[in-house]
Each structure stands twice: as structure tokens, then as C-alpha cells.
Image (cartoon, rainbow, N blue to C red; front, side, top):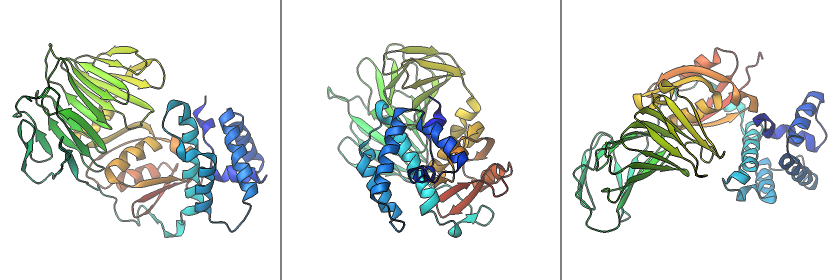
Length: 386
């Protein structure tokens, strides 16, 4: 199904419910409505709701919350069979906030606003005993874990000196990296893992058994220590990546949407939740999504690995993807005046610790979009001369 046909602005839906669409809006609305049965059911419920709560002075935030509750979108989970409906509900909510909640008079242009700079959070180590240890990038500390001590220094943690666990069951620790930070972890087998912002990894203090297995969320880069007798396995969102010794990147930020495995050196096998598997070579990317097949494409290594090298690199990327990535580092929220703005493609790069306004101003020069800022909120608008 055409992705665009799953999107509709809340303002259009509201006008359709009260028969106030003009000719052009009616064409777009009819295309969306006829795209699938889910859209028709959703609009039927929205129309009925508006007819029952017809009041020009109603509290729009409360009304929207009540509407979501009435039609059951708040109970949706990110399962494949419900994802389309949930996505539509979220998109409509964003459009609603854009048009009715945002007070544009309080926003400033990029040139007027204060620079948007990285917002670094605290990395946390969750121990098997339930204790949480904050890992400060500037602070050195020794942490007692099962089997020995580990040292935290300059945004890195080293488990090399941990002794073998005497217990039969493995003891696990977890590292959680917030927005605006990244972190380096050396596992007990000498494998090195770089974690990007808003990511986590669960790993055994000491590897035991016939394989070395970890689980991640978000994005991570692995430099796996070679061990032919004990393969290394990464579990992420139902996808398993199996290797012997190699370097690769895994990105699973779009939860439930797809897992992107990009190989730099060596060879890996990517297995999806349906039992299908592909083996990829260097400079290839495996995309494991809701489809039963695993897609293999040529990788854009400069773009994929930019975060590890301290840069944001975008090559013909959709604006929504670009701002999603930037928001994980600069910790801002994004609202769009229109859905079409999300699909506009841009190219550019930026050092991670630079003012993000520099890149956004370049995007504005294309005359395709305009950005307005208020504290940690970014509003994406159509330029007035469009």
C-alpha cells in the first residue's frame, strides 16, 4: 500500500466530518479514505464522535484524548497487525497539536533563537543485584560486579579483568545510554561495543556456554573478538545477527519497523523472526522488517557510521528521519505543519557537538521548509512564499 495513503492531517479529517472540504481537499481525502478499510472505519468513528460532541468552544486537547480513548487507539500495541492503525493515530495526533495546540506567536526563527546544543544525559549501569550506577564521562570509578571489579573512565567501561563466574547461570548487567550521549564498552572476551544515544545493551559479566550472546536496543557498533569455537550473537527486536569475528553496525531505532545490519568487515548471518536468513558481505546492509524475507542492499558506510566518528551524515534522507536522528542527540521535540514536509529529502553533515541550527539553516535555504523554535520544540512549516 502507498505509504502516503496512510497519512491524513487532522484538520482535513475534522473538516471532512463537518462537510467543509474544498475541491482539492476532497480529492486528497477521498484518496485516503478509499486506500483501505482501516481508514474508512477510523473516519466513521471520528465523524460519529464529532457529531455527538459538536461544540465550537470545546477543549481540543481533552476532546482529542477522549476521542482516542473512545475508539481504542490508546490500547494499541506495536504488533504488526495493529501498527498501521496505531501509526495513523499518532500522525493525526501530531497534526492536531501542530494546528491547534502550538501558539506560533511564541516561536522564534532560527536566526532569532538561541543555538540548539547537545543535551547530554547520564549513562547508567544496571547491575544484577538491582543496583544502578551512574557513569559520568568525566569521572573515573571502580565498580564491584559479580566476579571482580570493572573500571569506568572517560565514557568507557572495561570488563576484561572480570573472572569466570562460578555459578551455573550467567550474571547479566545492562548499560542504558540516554539522549545526547554515547558510550564504549569492552566485554570480557575483548569485544568492543560502541553504543549510540538512546540505546542499551544487556550482556553477561563473563561469557560461558557455547556462544557469546548480548541483546541491544537502539544502535550499536561491534568490533567482535575472533573465537571460532564460540560464535557471537546479537539479539535485537526479534532479529539475530551471528558472527565469528567481524565489525558491523546495528540500527533498530524504528521499533517494530525494521532492523538494519551493516557489515564493515568479515561476514555475518542475519536471521529474522520468521526463520529466514541471509549472509552479507562487507559494504552490504541487511534489512529485517515485518516482511518474511530479509532484504540486502548496498550500504552507505559514511552515512551509517557517521555517529561513531562524531558526525551526522545525511545523503538524500527524508526530513523526518533526519530530525529523528538529530533529536536523539539534541533532545528536542518535532511538530510538522503538514505531512508532506516529512518526506522532503536533504543532504548535509554536522559535527555532533556543533550548533544544530547551522544545518537547519542550510535546509531552509532550499526554500522547501522553514523552522521555528521554542525552548526544546522545533516546528517545521511551509515557507510563506511557497
